[in-house]
Length: 318
Image 1 (spheres, rainbow, N blue to C red):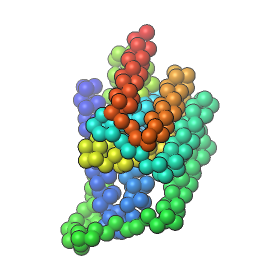
Image 2 (cartoon, rainbow, N blue to C red):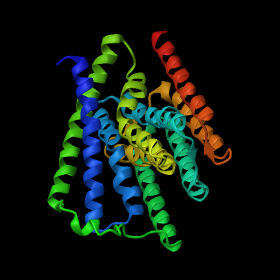
Image 3 (cartoon, rainbow, N blue to C red):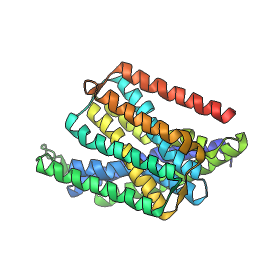
Image 4 (cartoon, one colour):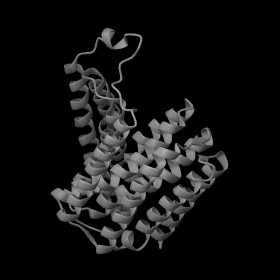
């Protein structure tokens, strides 16, 4: 099959599959009475990270660690510099101080854990278990904290919408199943297409994972964040980025290395993991400046992403 068709088909499968999966999961959660907090932290967080999970698993099992690790590292860089930069250009992003103190601390912790594992040179099952348990502890702590603050509640619309909702549980389960199938197929096409590109142009799989694959698997976050920014829901836009980056490291790399150890390519350990750590620090800086990210800062983030990709291109060509 043509390489371009593999990549385009893979990207389309990831975008539409991820969207279908998230919609089905959220509607199902509403139907059975889960709170918005639980939906956001689990189903939506898992749903938008499913492309990264399936792609990294596929890459690990076919022996492409550069794509498996580069996918997550590149996605986290793209989430902050590209996606948040675009969102801030559309509308200033307002930061929730209380939530950011909690979630920002976990974001930094996850980045440092990823840095430590990368410098170790290998994501082992033991490291994966630590990552997954850390995520579980974070989710439990957040839910308990929100309940104590009295903010967790069941999302039942006041206008009786839940009583008139016509969709059945089976319908939503079908959405989830269909989205999962599309995502798996899309990831498979994208991984094999990316491997073929790397071979055809003599570019390392790590660079392909950090660019084409990373941006492709971040498309659900891009669509969600831009839509939220355009509607003036900057808290959702920012929370989506922070939550996605936490999930990418603790869940995607954690779950993948639990089932299949991943060797970290030397190029990623030497450079890109430090870029991800530095970009995370940059996010803290701009977020705590008046607790908002303005259009100028958004432009700086976007410009930094362009510079990063120019650097990768120069390194790939040298």
